[in-house]
Image (cartoon, rainbow, N blue to C red):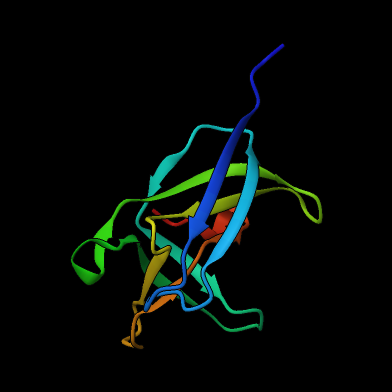
Length: 113
């Protein structure tokens, strides 16, 4: 029987993600690096964003962002985007200010690079 792999996210509240999070996901693929996504906050509007993991070192520094396919009870299989111990940092390509997210669940076609 194959070993089940999990991604555990433990993000304490921090300046990038004030609410933090504590989540566990069952991974069904190998993680890969991600640098550019199409982000939507739930409406019809979406924007391309550079994405990086965000680490607590130095009060907030970039690190790698990873994507992995995971099982999601509400959507079947989706792509989990995760980063450092302070979550993700997204920088919209249209000039809007950067912002943080603890993690994102995306459709595969939202990963651009």
